Length: 105
Image 1 (spheres, helix red, strand yellow):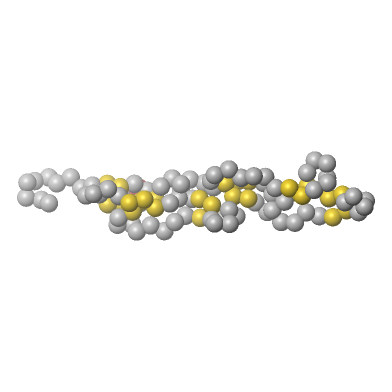
Image 2 (image 1 turned 45 degrees about the vertical axis):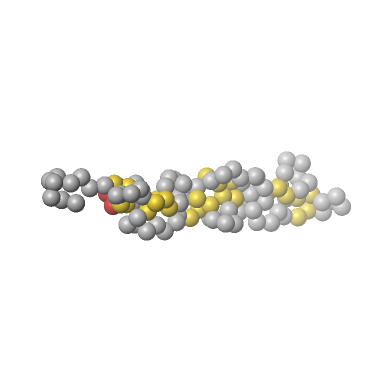
């Protein structure tokens, strides 16, 4: 509970918590890759996700699984020339085919 100067008490709103002196509502300052939780603390997004614009939810971008792959930060990146997104890795890296004969392209 929060103590007001006039001696009354109140509660902190969403995304905040009471400081040690119980005199104000505060929230942590989140680092890059973290989201602010309803209790005012920060939590790191898991691999292959990143905070949304409001820094409240971890999200994963939707990639074009032919030409893009999903980075560990949860954003799409483009495969290089002559590469495609590798379905065997869950489209989290790029691969290229190795031609076996001189007639294959």
